[in-house]
Amino acid sequence: MSLWVDKHRPRDLMKLDYHKDQAVRLKSLVQQSDFPHLLVYGPSGAGKKTRIMCLLRELYGSGVERLRQETMTFTTPSNKKVEIMTVSSNYHIEVNPTDVGIHDRVVIMDLVKNVAQTHQIDSSGQREFKVVILNEVDDLTKDAQHALRRTMEKYVATCRLILIANSISRVIPAIRSRCLTIRVPAPTESEIASVLQLVCKKESLNLPSDLATRLAKAADRNLRRALLMCEACKVQQYPFTSDQKIPEPDWQQFIRDTASMILSEQTAKKLGEVRQKLYELIIHGVPPDMIFAGLLKELVRNCDMAMKCQVASHAANYEHRMRLGNKPIFHLEAFVAKFMAIYKKFVEESMGDVF
Ligand SMILES: Nc1ncnc2c1ncn2[C@@H]1O[C@H](COP(=O)(O)OP(=O)(O)OP(=O)(O)O)[C@@H](O)[C@H]1O
Image (cartoon, rainbow, N blue to C red; front, side):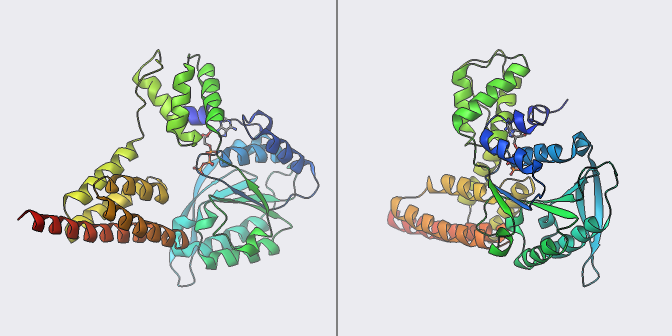
């Protein structure tokens, strides 16, 4: 049994529930003779991947939904072997080059070259090009981005790239200018509420509109999260009631626990334990900026006004650096260490007042 987020994912461009004008434009793009490279960007859970899969279906037909998973191996210039998971059909291949960290450049160059040089397996395929989907391009190293830019020019005859990012501010202008950029904004709360209503209807469930609105609000305009929370509500209690409790995603509790660890003890040993927790959050795909925001919110609860300002300004600094860099964990950990130092001093000083 699949989760609602998979089961009810729209498969046809014309069935997308919001940003419908954009869907129409994408459809007409497919009908034009020349299909460009695309750079699709927007926040997490806005529906980028869903839209792209609909677009591929429009390009190639339903064969594009027959997916297989494979591990591919690449050799770095220093003769190190790196492995990466790929998902592909006869017409496209998708990878997340940032999975291999600093070796992302090799993956991009070899993969695109491979794809571009192998002919369409299915001769009835109506397109001369295959599609390579690259995720998280805003997190690619600059080196990889430059390699990508050259690759885009070189193999344009047999290969089109669809690049996915959360924001384009860290994508180099040379890439941006070679793509048609498509922004997928987060759906509004009312759009989310109506998708929830639709999905519940398909499940033959009755969703009170108050609950739909509360879910949409709690999801922070992330549709995936809204659907997951709605399904969790169903498991917890059905028939629904307007005022039933909305279970929050596990990771929010996890961030709160991590914040309590930071407040409980400010030592190198504790910092090590906190690092493990941060790693776990990142590995489970919680976006680093959400971890930052979540931690900060919990930590400042325990600060007085002066300290709040100090902590917030440090947080802004570290978060900014995190956005510029490639390894969020370093910046998160540096922030935690800084917070521990400030907090420890504060506790010691206030102890001094008491005694
Ligand atoms: N137009 C739509 N109508 C209804 N449901 C949608 C629509 N677009 C997306 N969804 C639902 O929202 C969920 C999240 O969408 P999707 O995975 O496409 O987001 P994303 O922007 O690619 O997210 P991320 O960047 O986190 O990977 C999907 O599982 C799908 O069920």
